[in-house]
Length: 129
Image (tube, rainbow, N blue to C red):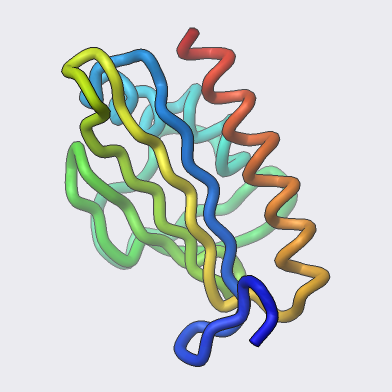
C-alpha cells in the first residue's frame, strides 16, 4: 500500500512539532482568532460546539465534530476530516502540536495538504517563538 493510504480512512497526512511553550498556551493560541487564522484560514475563535459550522477565507466549509478543551478538536474540512491535538512535551514548558487530515481524495491531494500543513506549522511556530 502506498505511503499515506489506509484501508479505513483513505489518504491521510500528519504533521507534528514540539514547541517550546506550555501546552495550555499552545492550546489557547491554536483555538483563538490569531491561531485559527494561521492554520485554518478562518476568522474568529474556533467554534466549540459539536455541529457548529465554520467557513474559511477561501470558501471551504465544515463543522466541528468534537472539541475537548486543552486536548483536541476534530472538524470536517470539505470532504475530509482534520484533527488538531496539543499534548504535553518532554517538560512542562514544551507541547507537541499535531495536525492530521484524513479522507483525502488522492495521492496528489495528500501531497498538497502535506505542503499546506508544513507551512501552517511553520507559521504557528513562528508566532509562538
